[in-house]
Image (cartoon, rainbow, N blue to C red; front, side, top):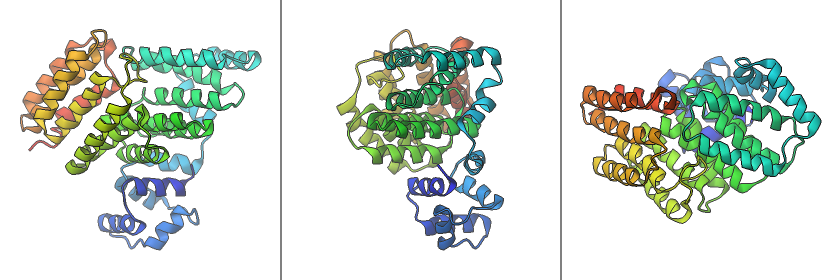
Length: 372
């Protein structure tokens, strides 16, 4: 995606007109930006300079590096080398990639089986382990011929890879989520296109990070298809979290109600896969959302419902629920008590089970999360 369309989609995801975007920038930075000039940006007639890139980054809540990356149009391999290959053994990765090229690589059915395995393992393995393994898989699929099915595989692998970086990291997670969306589009598969965007939206929304990107991807998913699906559910709930973090309680509640309707139509029976949203996981989404909204009754109901159905093999998610209670305390004004409660929950989980999302949640509790 070039810079102009990116600005337009981020603006539209906020529900802003071109004039509103210009007005917001003018108020915050005392500039004289016009609607016509925003239009020229979006039509790629002219590119924003460094100053306006910083303005756009701030008002659209998107890391500056995302705009810079699009301007530079970095290629897949260049970015991959910068973010993934360096920490690993280069000779092993090169051998893996060329072997795949020479032998043709796994079949489509083999890839689907691999993805199913990763979907299960993600729920319990640490981010570093997943990241190293998916790095190798991405090198393999990159070397295989372009087909719609392999673009779908690549898109889902990229989404998983992005989740091993914190959304607040800026360029890494966001770059991979947006690249996964482009790969999904190349697949031509509607379900993949919606799921990849929805999964990215709920990941960023749940983390409370890069909210502009979360809302953009959620809006894209909902525009592609309104047919009930797990991808649509993730998109709606991701957007709900973004609204809650921004302080739009009414918007968040409306989206939460919409999410329940989608869940009722598209819930999954699978209990332990990242590709599934069963009853307990839906309630984990609601638990944090209600905690952010200060709705203690709904939060506690969701926590109780989640605990009753949560598989014992997934202690990390039980930790999430306990930390949501810490957030509730912090929002109620007891930041010290909420932080202590959340810290005890996190410390009770073995360090190898910690996730980036849990660490970000800990920071949110400690900051008071809008305590009143």
